[in-house]
Amino acid sequence: MAQNELKNQIRRLRFENSEMTQEQLADKVGVTRQTIIAIEAGKYAPSLPLAFKIARTFNVSVEQVFQYENAQT
Amino acid sequence: MNRAQKISLTMVITFSLGLFLGIILIVMRCFDVGVPKIAFLFPVFIAGSGGIISITCFKKDKGTITFDERDKLIEKNANLAGFGAVYLYVILMSFLPIGILGEEASIPVTWCPVLLIGAGFCQAFAQSIAILIQYGWRDKNGAK
Image 1 (cartoon, rainbow over the protein chains, first blue to last red):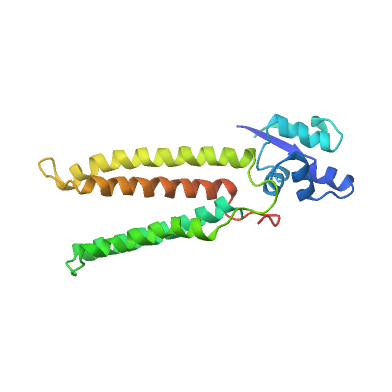
Image 2: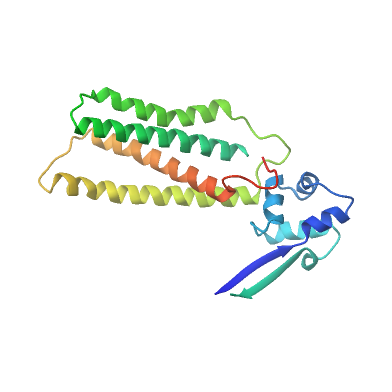
């Protein structure tokens, strides 16, 4: 059975960007803190516009923030 | 826990309590304990109190952004769950009287508004459960 997983580097990128808090990132991209927590935990896959907003906040490409893994189990 | 979660949790608790009391009253009536019809309003009031508590007690969330794309998706899915539950409820309530009372039986017309109120409760209950499941019963990482 194929299992699709969207991994992300948000937590690492936040700490690399002067230890940005989840609240600060949420305010910058225009979502709630709960959504940032859900994205970080891999429980919610953000929309493309939100993914781009997050990437632009960290000045990196979307691929550097999100990695799509298609694992066969 | 955001406002939608608090409201949903309150609804689930009050509805469950109302349902539990309703079942107890029906069982008591079946055994001829002498339960007056007016007593059945009590579980309805308990169940309905969830809505009143939600409106009066839970104020708008703090912070500049209180609603985003995830909340919108959760709300959409919860509405679908509520609609599905009402659909099942209508199917069940259409056939259940025939199964219990038989084909030749009749039911009082006062059952119609009761079924309508039941459909409303069913929709709100399913919607609340769907919201709680989608947000997660308890947020990890300190989300409140």
